[in-house]
Length: 381
Ligand code: ADP
Ligand code: MG
Image 1: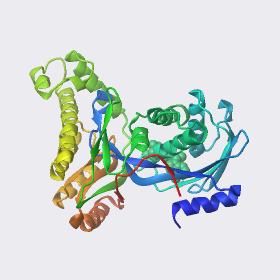
Image 2 (image 1 turned 135 degrees about the vertical axis):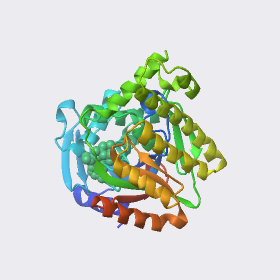
Image 3 (image 1 turned 45 degrees about the vertical axis):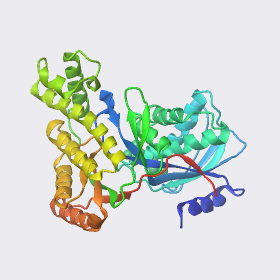
Image 4 (image 1 turned 90 degrees about the vertical axis):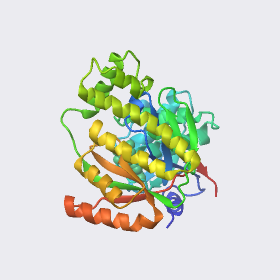
């Protein structure tokens, strides 16, 4: 059964008639621009055709009653701070309600049933899809859409910070809310300005290969990378690496170590690669896009040193198979690669990746085809 029909059936069972209103929001990918956010560089995400969908109907009380189809659990909570539910999945929805109320918006009691097909914890940001779906829906239902889209993204981000214990940036929620079919969005992490670029790679598919490994490292490598970047920026007398060119970095190799140099070099090159990819997309030059993806992988692996054996294996295999572009997506040390794959190679590449990865690491990776699609929206029938 289609997701919407299933939700409608379960909603009618749990809460009766009349039907509510349907909303959806999407998971996301980031084509290029990794470890750039905290250096005031660019990220380049887009929403995908994997969504969280909810049917919502005001219930005239001050209680929220919610059923999760995928988890097969029911939760009920009030709208005051003390009413936080215990189930972690319900805290996302509670958090959205609270963050809207804290900003002076309105949320009243409602009944809802929701489901999704964004894989959980695979790097496609199912949590942002969930947050954006409800932020958008409750804005439409109770606030005449008066809360602007950026604030909806921030409401999702604050929910992660304040109710889910995840200290995330803004990219995931931004992409989920602002996503547009056949477009990626270049977000400038310095001032949060953004621009849409066409992304409709005819003859190619975007494929995520999830290694299903996550290496937990002892000494927080994320903080160490940040510190390296900050040390170099400080030595060069700038606020962030955004303000440094490669020539300037090379001309001033004092006050920081060789290791810090390589970290900074990666960040500066990555900032430039995002711009190169944007220009290539405007020409429809997907070979150039792919080349930049491989360069990012190389930089993340050799200079930034946040890859791991399994991800290097997957990116190398992509290259051997003739895939247009492949790189780590996300922070590194596990997770997935994002691949730009010619249609003619698609099935063979996936079969090879599954087989060879399994032979070497003892389990198959998960594979997801994604299409760049709309973000948060109301579904009209
Ligand atoms: P991701 O990288 O996919 O965002 P997170 O750990 O941040 O992974 O978020 C996953 C959490 O979001 C789940 O543990 C669950 O609480 C909630 N979630 C995501 N998708 C669903 C769903 N379809 N149904 C219920 N809860 C969901
Ligand atoms: Mg998440």
